[in-house]
Image 1: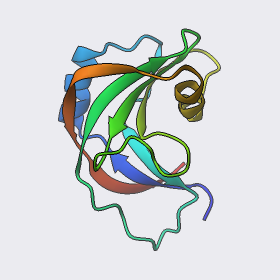
Image 2: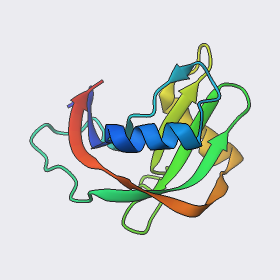
Image 3: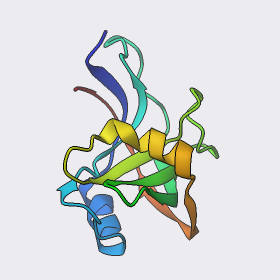
Image 4: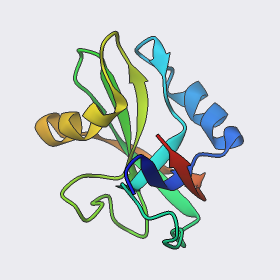
Length: 125
């Protein structure tokens, strides 16, 4: 079904802690979820994982900032993209550009990784 996304919501306490560590570079703050898949069936099961780690950061310097997330030992989402949290956006930029930025520019490692809770969820876009 189009317009439905399956993934994880970032709990408010973890979001606030990450915002203190990584103040948003751009005016539009997203910072609320990690996508598993788009166009998901509303009847499909939610993901089992309930924790992850922020392991990297990517910023194109032109309005897209994202944090790379490792879930179950992987940053690769399985479709050629990475698990990530679209962090902040500049004017005219969209969260879906985060994967393009990560692919084109790579990401810088965050040491040590930052443990986060993940709440399995499904939402309409």
